[in-house]
Image (cartoon, rainbow, N blue to C red; front, side, top):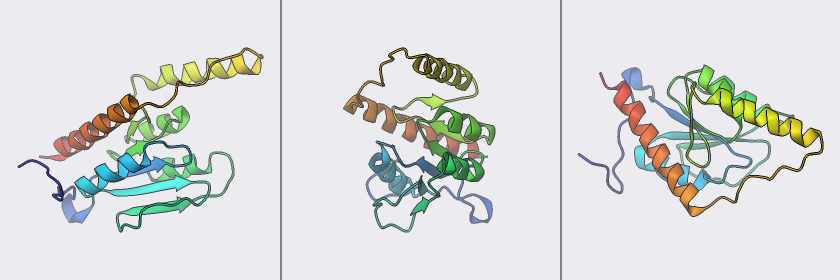
Length: 170
């Protein structure tokens, strides 16, 4: 049976625990709306974590957590709550590494899946660019976010949700 509009899959395991939860590093996330649509379709809970209040749809499966405005407060909150097979949406490489340590699945805003195999390279590149900027070298910022990026993100999120479901099926 496929998924159609208005049909939600059951992602609850033994004792009613939901098999996955989506956490969004919300302050600079360009794909919140897309994440909400996918979560609603699959019947998943979402927590948006941010340093300041922001408007989120009024839905029982969606929660906004506002943390202190201290450096890395949102990252710390997400890393403390993300568990095995939860999905974390972030563009922050150190947060991605911390969540991978918890066995969460991590997806970047442009649809890149962060894994144990590629996170070290991402962290090393970030470190190198930071050093260059600190030495006064001009580095380009990231390219503009495109519709193609949005599409790749949606594909990756859908794929990851289905992988978690498949892996959880005995």
